[in-house]
Image (cartoon, rainbow, N blue to C red):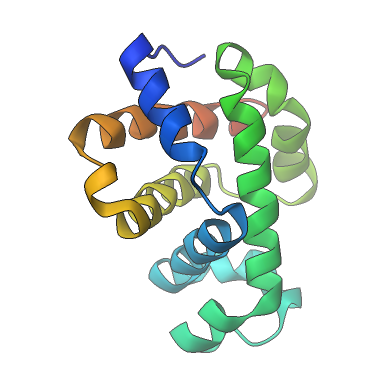
Length: 147
């Protein structure tokens, strides 16, 4: 559960309504793979991840980034029940994919950075703080099924 004030919720939903999920999702996931190269081991089937340019231009990275941000959007609609919303994804990432749950926090940071890059002045300190709460809540929910 994420506790947002009415102002924070308005800031998050207002900015999110402008977000191009495909563009921001691909860039955020690409940034994760470039900045934290050990995360690439989960994406070996994506082909060439040999350089920053290869990662950022990889269509499979872009497609999966869109998928990730589409799920994130779902979470924004259920801030009061993030654990329930992400229960199946948590189970998948824990039991089948064996993803280190710390990676969810790292990806959340990349989402915030990418939003700041794209929305600059609109992504002021209050909006950033609200998004930090949201990505922390989502990361916690995704890590919920881990033992």
